[in-house]
Figure 1 (cartoon, rainbow, N blue to C red):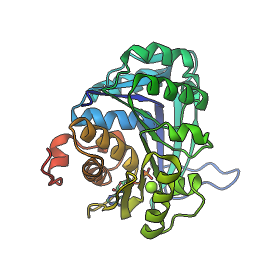
Figure 2: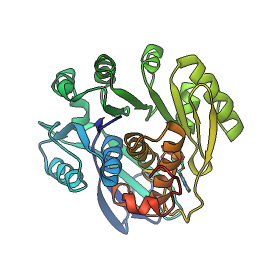
Figure 3: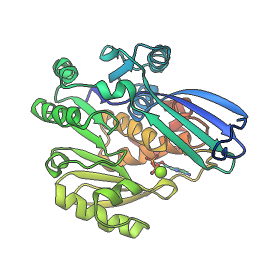
Length: 307
Ligand SMILES: Nc1ncnc2c1ncn2[C@@H]1O[C@H](COP(=O)(O)OP(=O)(O)O)[C@@H](O)[C@H]1O
Ligand SMILES: [Mg+2]
């Protein structure tokens, strides 16, 4: 039914410092190590789908800097198509994180080139978008561009997924135009009107949201799993029991996995079970993109019959 994924979103050059404690105001201290990673929600989701082996195009902007070269090369290395990745003057998107051994983390993000994705870029993509295309958005590029692109994708009859992360105010009308809206529990509380602090509230809230929007929804609930609602059925999908070491990219891996599963013809609920296995593998390794599993690795824990 679907034959390719187009991710319209962000790419970030992630710098991650590992350190014992945060420096005090006015203090400079030593970090123990630094890691440079290709990240950004858009790129992460594209990479997960590509690692599983489906055709994936990444549309977005990178800077004319060395990090831009790195980002392009890295996602291409994972099999993501970059014909629609544009280079713009200035810096690429970037994040700097200070990561403590007790799991605490502080990070700041520079939007950089991600802020340059424009309506004109979407027009260039138009010929690629067909009813067989799954288009995936997150909220790390300009909202105006996203709203414009969603309208275009609607006209073209594509399947539209929006990951409402990071949470941002959006017109209710836009949420109603989606085929699938995916958020984690923190974002779900933002788009709904109740704090989601248990599986039971998640189930009640997701039903309300689906009714309000007329759009299928998924709430991911971290270690607890996820809830899925298509307007008729609501299902709780527990996470897989694994030795988790770091949750970076769990949600992005889930979405990339979901795209793969939809292309393979699984229904929404089965696709979520598959996506849950992708995330479970991802949280067992450190890092984002490098931690995401290949199809072979997912199949070790996925026991569905639709493979
Ligand atoms: N500790 C964990 N063990 C197993 N699976 C996990 C764990 N944390 C997250 N997951 C899986 O990853 C999915 C997405 O994680 P979540 O934290 O909700 O997303 P986000 O990264 O967007 O915050 C969850 O629905 C769950 O299936
Ligand atoms: Mg989470």
